[in-house]
Image (cartoon, rainbow, N blue to C red; front, side):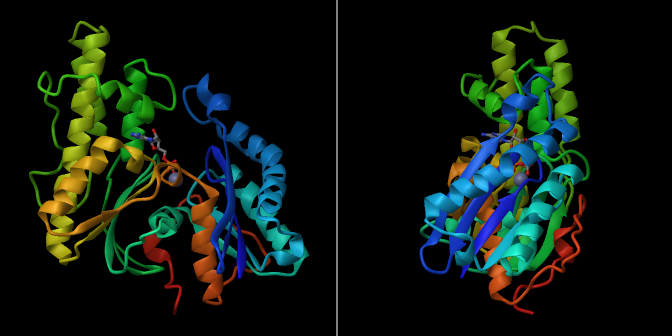
Length: 339
Ligand code: KG4
Ligand code: ZN
């Protein structure tokens, strides 16, 4: 079985083909970062228009790279949510129409399920059950995973997603969009001893998160500092330390609560090296193991959608001909792939 995967939920157009024989046959990604940079964030209408411009050429490119024609594809997977409604509609309509014209099934994929399963594309994938820490621009979730589609959300952010907090903090420090990677790079030069930021919601039980206070703390620290390059780097470092520590504390709790010793980190912030190192140390101390996608598959991509769609199509699931997208969609609502 060969599945074409399409991702257009935000500002990245991703396309890939995943197959029973050979795994990931080809993948490509076009990032709209330059388009949105001058606005300091994603402009939804511009994102939709750019997906329209790029998607079909990228599909042609991927099919050519995989050496496949239309008759070689057995199913089409598209991201149906959560995400920006206009952007989602471009991928969903294109994917659904292609599947219809090729006479093959289509499947609507949950974007966060794509992130969650992305480590399965690596040479040594984790087995189930596992705990997944999903940290992206729109989400921060801890999930107990018993199989494809068998998800129990253990905790989530009650306000900002962790990537959002990175981006907002970077913006107030005057760093360019997208802020997360820029802030992480600057933090490397920062002094970890100069400022200490709070570890939100760690002094009470539970696995929920809150990150909006950290951003405010960063703003107040910046305003009362010399507002020079030294302060900028030291604040970046303190912020990153606080995020990594907070996530590690919650992951340790999740491991203890569930008894599960396999931890997956996925989503854009999963590319953060300090976070990876901190969670790696944690899992070592717990006698467990940690899994993450290669950095390019931490951020949005078509490969994870092709893989998640492949799992569901293989289990006989498919989407109806009518297309609907879900800008908001909880992982808890998904059905197991093998039900
Ligand atoms: O998963 P993703 O590509 O898109 C969403 O589904 O949201 O995640 C993007 C987020 C952005 O907030 C970006 O700033 C953050 O991931 N990010 C990082 C790093 N690389 C990307 N945050 C911290 N450190 C990084 N190295
Ligand atoms: Zn994402």
